[in-house]
Length: 396
Image 1 (cartoon, helix red, strand yellow):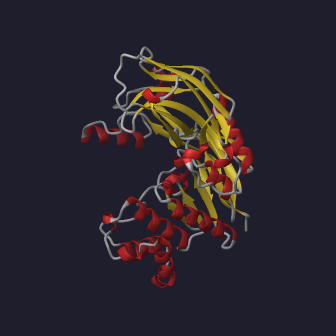
Image 2 (cartoon, rainbow, N blue to C red):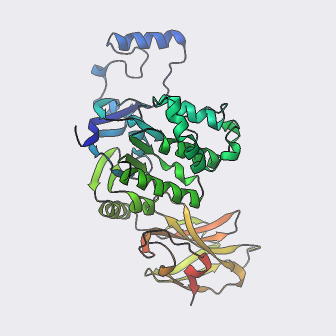
Image 3 (cartoon, rainbow, N blue to C red):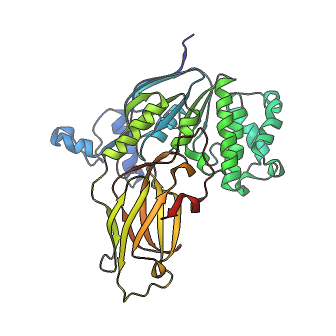
């Protein structure tokens, strides 16, 4: 038997841009018949390939995946990273047979269970218990096999109180708990997990990560995990795949691939800072940051009504631009024009971050200053540090 459980051979996935339907039943039938007879579609924007400039044909389609060649071993935990639109979710959908590849072939040796979106595979009108048996039946398990794992599934999900309630009344977090528990405990050989764990709380997320490790090390199951959380990828994945524009950019050891991905993000940055807001009213000058000391000067029009405007310092994820850490320095009118801060890197987990200076309040933003550089901050840890934001930025 081959040591590989998944063989992906030159797979591409192409989508057509624009409206799929022609707008009328007669034209849809005409288009289907033309494709069946392998003739040009008379209702297509491109009536004949002979009369069109070649580049126009490419403009009609977009490739979500292009020429993917990949072999995945049994018991491996493969992390897939990349920017939004790189093709990460598409490759999981192709492996799950939710959508077929446009070209190429995929060979899978074993049962596949997938967790791609909140509530994937659940019927909203069925109870949690009924959905467990439904998913087991889809995987080809007998009722006896499902019964043997039923208590373990419910205990892990921590939703025993609601197990006889229709899933449509579950919160998104409860659905994720049950969906992951079902996917992880039923009789499958390959588990595909998309970025759905971001919905759950931190405690349950850690529980899921340990379970995925156990599936690989103890049960010999293969896990393919897509996430923007590079710390989770680093902590559990034995191999990592970096996708870029639908192509495999690099494949190898997790630490090396994450560093290559972050460096790629850094190379593609513009050099000038991003400034949003009225610069006649607010300005950030003489900005400097050496990964430890942050210095800048702030000026504003003395005539404007500051009201409840505060000054915020924020650290953002380079993967999805979401705010990870922020500090409120206080009311703008009470601050000195020169700001000097020290960043205590030993207080939070290492990653590469964007830095943003923001003026406004919790409900509205009036001005943003965001340097183009990406900063390497924090300390390397096997587990995420429980940080206190007030201790990270210290006034000097």
